[in-house]
Image (tube, rainbow, N blue to C red; front, side):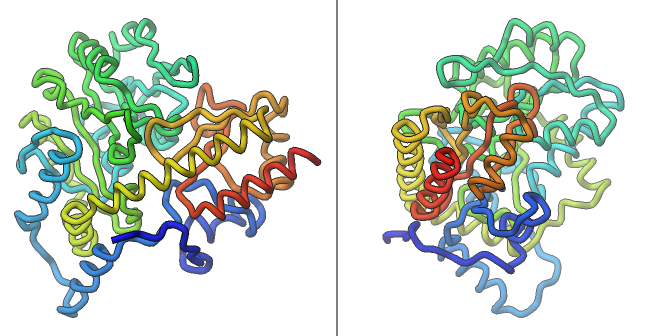
Amino acid sequence: MKYNFDELLNRENTGSLKYDLRNKIFGKSDVIPMWVADMDFRTPYFIVDALKKCTDNQIFGYFLFDKSYYESIINWIKRHHQWEIKQDWISFSPGVVPSLSLLVLAFTQPGDKIIIQPPVYPPFFFTIKDNNRQVVENPLLLENGRFKMDFGNLEDKLKDAKMLILSNPHNPGGTVWKKEELKKLGELCLKHKVLVVTDEIHSDLVFKPNKFVPLASISEEIANITIALMAPSKTFNMAGLSSSSVIISNPKLKARFDEIMHTIHVGLGNMFGIAATEAAYNNGDEWLKQLLNYIAGNIDFVEKFLKERIPQIKMMRPEGTYLIWLDCRDLNLDSDELSRFFIEKANIGMNFGESFGTGGEGFMRMNVACPRITLANALNQLLSAFNC
């Protein structure tokens, strides 16, 4: 079946955070929203059909996690990432961010040091600080249009840290960490007995010839100190259904995580999210193939437009995700001026680089998971603002 990613959908007044929160975030309600990481594409029909089937019974009581649910996750990961996992490694969680907070509570104590590598997804900071742990930054290095880990400084910081949180593929930069990079990271964390939590929510959204490698797939030793967070929400545009997986092969770590899930009582799940997850993983291969082709076309479109018309804004080409990290430093605008340029002059709502921490100054994050006409309109507004 051919999916139509050019279809324009009206999401206003639907309770969409991306659309209906614009006035609060940007001070105006008509900016083109290219901020929150969800897609402006229709969720595929096989997920909608699964949700409709849930409503047919007209009873929404307590339910069980069927074996078929776990098998859908196991088979998807094997097909797409060549990683063979087992059912007893998988724990349900309502989302990656709740999982991060629960893992911080489960495996660290107040005051413990947790390493992150900015610029990075803002909830990494919040889940550490809100739980009274210390954020230790190991800023990434930007070299030749790609982020790299600063392993020299990292080893010093690992000596008294309890946990490291990794973003792979990286948000906001779109870097898909190579196997050699992950192996080196894993070995350093093994050496210093540091637990690694890896946010792999964008793992399905990787463009050829790049290849996503699950950190825990590299070796049994590295797997023993790794906790992987995965979900269908980015891939299939179903973030509002609150369904994700925490994958832990180490039985002691798994037992501890399940214990805190039981203590807080957030592991019951939502029957709609579970049904959608199973439908997505069992039927989503062709959808994903077409989606990646379309998003790659959008990325090409942005790259060509900027190079030809606004070379002062440089695009860091993502190896994965539908997020583009824009280097706006050559515009020579301070933070307030950059904000006014995008919101007031260009009428576009993006994420400001500073919100991603150290290294984000002068950058903007652009979500290109939208119909190409929407993208073209945004870029033309950007050009008009630039030429004013």
